[in-house]
Image (cartoon, rainbow, N blue to C red; front, top):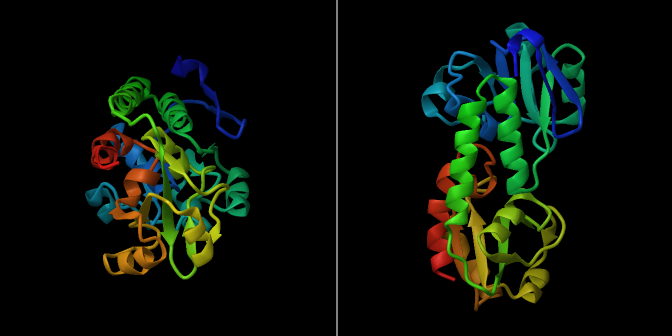
Length: 263
């Protein structure tokens, strides 16, 4: 793609994004995509990020912060004069993104599967002039996931992201797709349903995963769930490995080996 002719792609919302040249001032509104931009080598180009864009830590410490993913400080964003904003349909608020779209080019991802995540990385790579680096990251992710050894029979699992009330990541989420990718059957349908004690008992899962985010589950929470589901193997898990859909996926398959091996 020639920079002289401009950069044109269609984002995951089906919107045409056109830039006259590769962006020099990028604001990212999504933690996993922020980390991906840095892994592409765009240390100077990223001029703003959210409070939750904690990786890499050295960039989190020095880069301007423009609010939370759903509580963006639009005045700060405007003051930074970005020539590209990178957002996500689920993690950001529609009204705020539409307001930003009036003044700036905005790429919006919409990710429910591993394939969606790989497509996002390829698209952003083209948009920022880092296609080769993005393709290498994508290739590494495909290779490591393909190398995972899965059992023939998928065991039922329940992945909890919140407590009081309990809330699960269902089969129609990115987490749900990752569980399927590594050989588990998500016992919960939909997206993020609230789960009663009775519903969890009825699910009778073989495994329960307690995420480190957004609710920080601890060892003390294992026992209360073990009472409800005495046959389940209950594990505390790194929520970033299951839910961050950027370049962190390069390391995810190695992390998942311990869960696949314990099935």
